[in-house]
Length: 317
Image 1 (cartoon, rainbow, N blue to C red):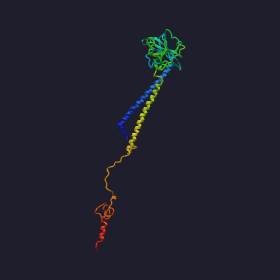
Image 2: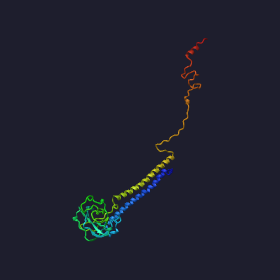
Image 3: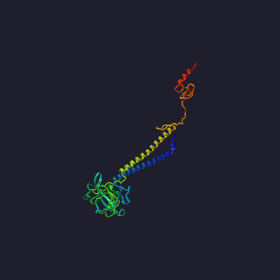
Image 4: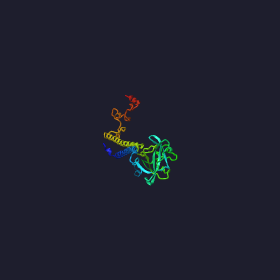
């Protein structure tokens, strides 16, 4: 009854199902692992943020170039602040309050080619105001802070994405800083966790693509989607199989699908003459046709005229 499984059509269906199910399960598992990695990375970043102020600092050179594995680690670097180019980064929110970053460039030999390192010395609430910002320390200093990756224009605030006043910067990026200072700038920055009053420390931010953002939940949605695809393939295969099995069973019993009527085989009809009941015969067994030899017509009228009958009755005695 299951010989239909050996037909070319079912060979194609079976091969498709055998290949599609593992692929769907693999893709679903891969998306789930991506989501798990983002959750683990998010917890790691939170732990680093809580312990950044007391974490053991590592030399900056050992953490460069910045990667997802080194972002958030506490680094230390020695150099001198550039007091001639003070910068403010407006429209930045810390703990739900809007304010601005205070950014200074540290001239150091700990980076490749002696590039300057951007350092966020702290955060102040309200609108950017250079008069409220304390001057950076003079002379050679050792700075400790959480290592951060370069920002993009998407990280700029709503009011910091357009034209900005002098000595203000929309986002912290080497490509934006080279137009402001006459020297090279490192493609990373530090956020100090031990700041001078009235500055407040800026908590480290998770790198793009590692936190529990919208993309993380997209990975979780894709996981469910691939598993549903695998279940759908199994459901459709079973449905096709059940339908074919029922049709094969009906065919074995001589049943035809509903809506189809059996066609009766009929041979050529034999030619038959008139029925016996249509044979009109007279008393002598002859048919009742207009035979000239008969003395009576079909209507029963004598063949001879009445005059002939009268002449025979007047014959002489």
